[in-house]
Image (spheres, rainbow, N blue to C red):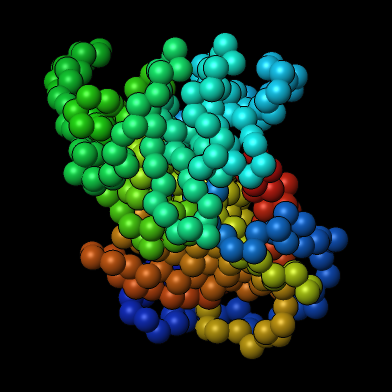
Length: 362
């Protein structure tokens, strides 16, 4: 994980929770703030509740690949709305829905169920009027439209396992060959999750909770996977369909004028670019807490997700920067102030507006 190092302790490490001070402290009085024009990023206004699972990169079950809208009615006397898997038509009669074969034969009368949906390849979920409060029923079907009633699918967490595989590492130049390990998720040992895509053969896999990754998306199982420095989440619904999301590398929140909001950094390349931007700000000695206008605009950057060194860096529009290393394990907690060129604050605001906005427009 790349650290943010724009606000650096050049006077030596100072451990503990107290704010550190140096022998030569800059004058703790903010200069008059005169910055070039900047504005609150518009895209942040649309993010009411930031969610770490906001950037999907792969969906194992895309409904649009199996279900298509009926434009021209294929059979006289029936009002069809959807075609499922090139073998079934959903038709309506009043509030009820039924099924027709590709030859127009009624396979399921429209007199009991109010909703018919495809919940996974080859499986239909049939719902009755919600006011009846009855459980859903399920049918399996094949390419010929043959229907069979099946028991309700049951999600079992132990059906998903973490598989370890040792592979041979070929010799390269002066380096001898050897072995390395990769990890994959398997479904009942019959399906490797991500097979046929680039999203497999991970360096690390761990099961996590929705609370641990701060998401409101109602999946039945969540896994954090990592390859090199890239992080993803693999999430399963109750039918074992899965979605792979970009992982969160950090979080940015800001106040600009009357605008306030925040979002996750969900792209590794963007995260690396942000680190380079912060590094370009240069270094400064640590100083005492400045006396300044608490109503100034500011940007706060949280980084170090998934590591033992969580860092919060807050840059105000006057250039004052507060860094808080919340160390775990061998990492020691450390807090200090520095002062940067005031244009550093503007650079961060513009970077969020121009770069992170593209993540949330995809």
